[in-house]
Image (cartoon, rainbow, N blue to C red; front, side):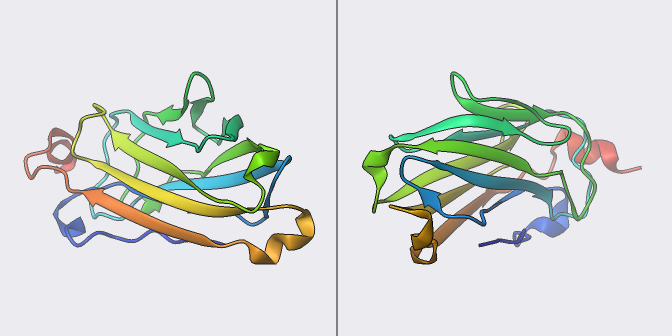
Length: 170
């Protein structure tokens, strides 16, 4: 399953962050699963160099085993997070983050939700997006066709006088 970056309606006013998730294999009870998280800038302006942070919340029964991606500094404990501070150009995306999770056998046959959030600068900043991903955990690898995915993307617009956006206007 894959997703694409979607520009929010306000994208014409400057940079904005988007987040997307994809996964190709089944999430198998007692095994592992892998999320691929992509952060993009669908807006017409560059993001500036303020820190970009991706955080993840996993359901009970799922544990982050590893996380990483080119240019990202990631940790899985005490909570899942990845950061970077380089500028992201207009209509560009950072290299994806791969998150590998361990899946408890108790999740077999259940649909569970994970959420991933991206913020730029202060965690309370208005420039943030989030996505919720539902996956159905199968009993065996051969049941991978039964897997389903649904997503919700929420985008909050940056203020019109956002310092980073003003800094890229030359």
